[in-house]
Length: 104
Image (cartoon, rainbow, N blue to C red; front, side, top):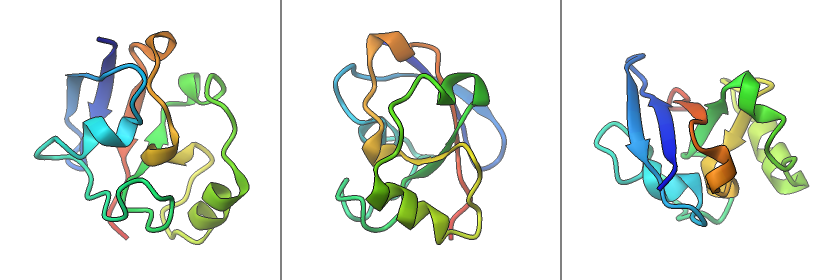
């Protein structure tokens, strides 16, 4: 399983095993310090908002229009913001570092 580096809302970094082929959201919502993912991955609530480490952001497929629109409405939006329900974990992303965004 590829390793995902997760920075929680308190700034602590955790090494977490993620399953290749699943959305990053699936891994993060199982963590005690993770995300809510209220809509279950339907790209409609932004409770799975994360920041992708800049070194990894370019390695991901670009966000689709619905994701970009939802992210643009968030007060904590950054250039590296993504919805974890829209990011598929792959072996090529092993070691990717993500930060859980503040609650909106």
